[in-house]
Image (cartoon, rainbow, N blue to C red; front, side, top):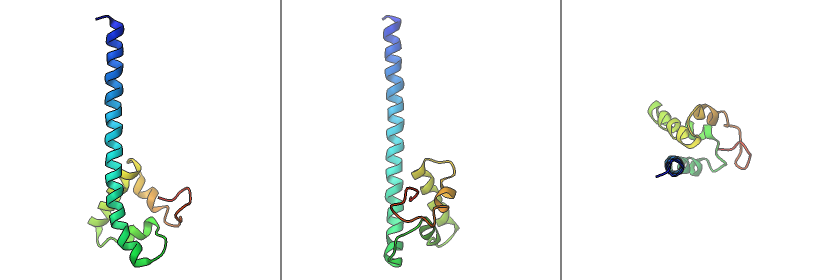
Length: 100
């Protein structure tokens, strides 16, 4: 095989690895969104108004539940400081560009 072919195969392998990583991130995010939605639905039914992230976080019964919500928020927003970012959105309404 020529070195050009190896370079092309290497490129294909790199792209395939990258695409699979990205797909796994999308799947993880979708799963986290589904869980977060299931946690938010009862809060929305109870409050009967548009929700804020603070509403959902405040609905947690204890620190363990708050930590689980923060972990979900991290997965949804891609890590970093998402729990702080989401909590800071407390006053936003659905439909705004900053809404969760």
